[in-house]
Image (cartoon, rainbow, N blue to C red; front, side, top):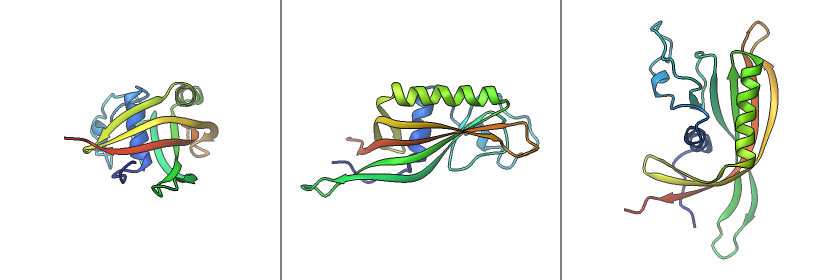
Length: 164
């Protein structure tokens, strides 16, 4: 039986994407909310959860969405569900955004198996991401040069306390 979640699916999946090397920890960027006019770090594809900064152009953001409840275990009463999330890829060009989103989609659908991540002393197991659907959005705004591609996803996630 799993334990209560201390983090949202967006935070957990952002960490999974970092572990799978699709992007980097956003810590160097967080100092620039709001942009102070200072020189921005040169880190590529920072991964955020729950909110997206104005810079850099190439960024990955994970948002929590509606989960899909599948069943309830009769003996324990535990709800079996897939957690919903959207991975938003914003790129300087259409080609960059599309390729990064496709790399993530392929990894999610074909390769992510039994990934364990730890956030603030809480362990999470992501056995799989059985569904990641690529949805091209287009330009960020009509006058923007940046492009958006979303991935609508469901994932099984199990929380475990770290045994000390």
